[in-house]
Length: 500
Image (cartoon, rainbow, N blue to C red):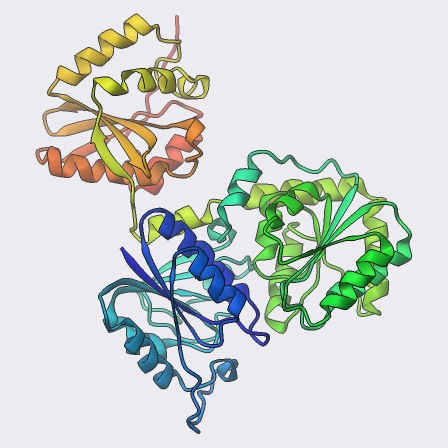
């Protein structure tokens, strides 16, 4: 699978577009995808990051042509016209065929997309402005807006699949991993994290530091800035003066968020990183395009945002002081945010793109012990028809029988030499009854639909006589019910049971 990304990063644009593309690219590469980034004016530290990750990077040259720019609100951010950029992009893609092009750029719209889509099988747009027309197969807007269902009406083709809301938030793998370990904040603040983005061109960071220093608190303060911050030395000196800890271009952002009890920061993708880890945040709009997002997210109880137009240092100082005295509100925001963003957005996006790297193998005698241990996990037993523990002897009889039964198929999904889960099909004529569970210790939460889709494809090839698949789900097993409904299964009948 070959995927090309067209995005930029600069002091004017910021790094948000690049980083969310990189998050998706990381997930795709981990699953075996071949990745190429095409950018103009990409800072050296970001191009070096691509090299370190083993991803191709082709820079587009600066366009000196005196050609009129397009009329889009952010057209000047591109540095050339859309047509010339599209031609340069096509030139960078001519050496091979591409399955997907993913574009994330406020200065590109239907004009550019129509020009380049002939060089790929499908095209995906990442957007959050909803201010222009698109010609794409999939559109992702990971942000939260009260009017989300109608934002892209008449702005995309009728066949376009919309992936809307923080359910699809692009969060790095470390956020998914740490989420399993963090808890809803108790409300009492021992650590504060300050982060206004890697560039922070308006230097909100320094204002926050001044506000916190005026509170004269004994709480630990972690401050994160990027290597390109225009006031880097000044901020580092201020941190030294006030006993704060300054982190420059840290690789520990997820850990710092998990350790903090309160954050002060801007909008953008960082909102969803903090929400996924249950970190309550005082958020400020750093750009006009963030204003609606922050207001709507605050109305949903996901963040805390002051509306005062007073001196920003005073606003930060007073609202931090107020929250320190209101642990109940901090706990409420933490709980709401964590329920809203589960950190599995990348996996859902890959599934929606139809990209599935789970391989299927038939179980053999060497898999007996693993299947025995997985099936006896209490969490698996609790949602199984037979919830009692299974003895080794009983398992061996069952396992030997199923391997020789032509009307039963026991298969295992694998990826990167790891077992993802187990699927069983019990076949009667042209109907297969499916049972499925994931390997809980493998960290594959959220991969149920991928596993099920892979198993269905395997069944179609290896048992072409099957015309229907059905599943039985225990009452109260909402996870399995949602899995099958999301995989285009429909309810057929409900069974009622009474024990005597």
